[in-house]
Image (cartoon, rainbow, N blue to C red; front, side, top):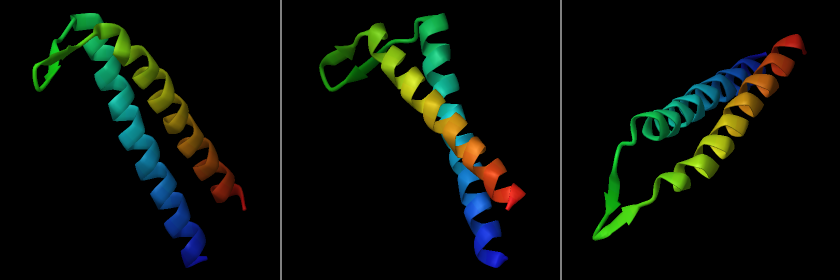
Length: 71
């Protein structure tokens, strides 16, 4: 039972972290925040794949956590 609880906690925390990353990407797109890595300005379209991937990972984490709870 402890292993199942630990796994569920890990999945929930992962879902929250990836959800926050998705919100950050969405906020960057909405508010047009600039990002620069060294001398390279990162284009805004680069946040679109970041939003999609982190959103999928967040959803996946919460889905797996809810399946762990049912077991």
